[in-house]
Image 1 (cartoon, protein in one colour):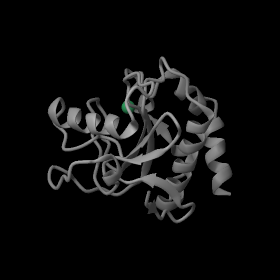
Image 2 (spheres, helix red, strand yellow):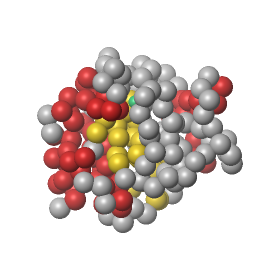
Image 3 (tube, rainbow, N blue to C red):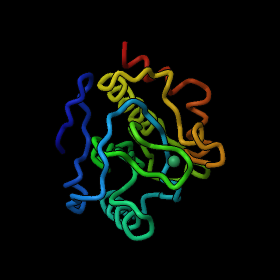
Image 4 (cartoon, rainbow, N blue to C red):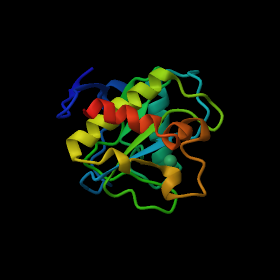
Length: 179
Ligand SMILES: [Zn+2]
């Protein structure tokens, strides 16, 4: 496991090589991070496949079933709360809905949190990652949003995860880490 040195808290992030990502060199657009946005992957996932295999499947699906060069999200959080590198952060993410993900750092939790429960360990990792992104890119934690906040018609990131944004508890955890 290699470390991406965020200015604030070095986080253990599993790099792309660790899950067997393809080497992708084209189809990306560059951007600069100004926002942090929370998603879920939207498909019920209970760990039937190991995370690396799940990520390889997501990458293949993104390239075959969607017109995308890569996984649309920059970071993926698995069922154990481990953080995995998705699309490299310097490249704009992708969406199939009506908002422009340019300048958004996209965090996605693997699973469907309309139906699954989010664990304390996953919430810890989300807060750690959000805090590091806020610190590194000077994003105000009060401006962290979820997909649903930009596109009211989507269920993403699922009500069981969204509840923690809505009641302010997740942002409070982010702020605690920034103090
Ligand atoms: Zn989403």
